Image 1 (cartoon, rainbow, N blue to C red):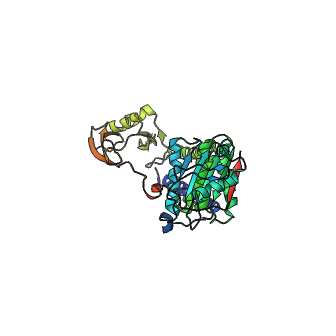
Image 2 (image 1 turned 90 degrees about the horizontal axis):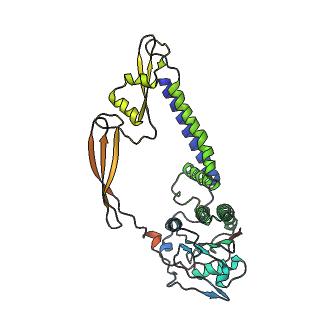
Image 3 (image 1 turned 60 degrees about the horizontal axis):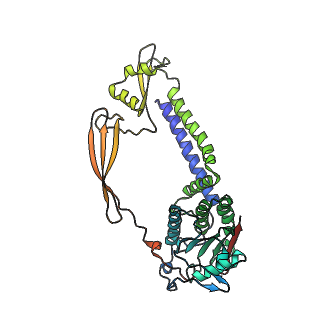
Length: 393
């Protein structure tokens, strides 16, 4: 690769990185909502004296509100598989640990099972107050209620929020939940809607709180593409991939003057170039870890050999012979558990020089999520005055 090629490549990389940062930063600025909760949980959020001592179903008139088994997810309509339920729970635990906000998701078959035949709003408000969702002093709880066969849902918010949040919760329902619910894709809708709700509350998606503006922008773009569909991602990746392939092909196939006599050089064919490669280089081509091009000058006979690494090769560089002919295999010697770490042996073998090496690595213990907000078993005694938003499909 000549100095001109290096300059062209560096210029393209700089332009792509600069454009990517600018796009992410711009989207991050335009899409970041104003957070309505503190960046860090107040100390009383973890130690509220108003916590309910026990969980018991309550009755209001003819309505019998359901009890809760979990403070994060109660999927009584069975809309989530176990893995999705755990993902939602982890997001709500992270929200609580980050901000102290108690947010819970409840799915039911229909409100008639609990003696309620009217609109969803009074049922959600009564249920919210029956459970006491949110901190008793700040009243910052959030309830996501989905009544599957009533085809209605509600985001009920605590009395401590400004009523301007109602319109933002309506946007969450219209954009995050309902497009999926109308296709009966309840699991996708709940996961996407919970993420959107958390973003409206905190100004960032779950796990993005410590990201910079550009990172948040790209996170938003990735989620937007996921909501619209994988075909949109394909439309974005196809031209980017085509540009990358074009650049690589241009750098590889462009005319090359001989460094000695400046005569245009010729590229040898696959069979002819093997005559100029050593055994290790031919093995690399056989393993498809590296491809070589041999260019020769028809006037002075000068030869240039150019090396192109494969993007998707499973072989690495051997520390002994430096060819990309080193394979890696892992063998678990003892599995990790929640109480102890595990061990595995990693073997390195070179197909060219026969180099062999092994090392023992530690497998970390399986993390136990029973920490922080995951240790909660009851709500903090909060209340709602009827704020929030509703939707139907």
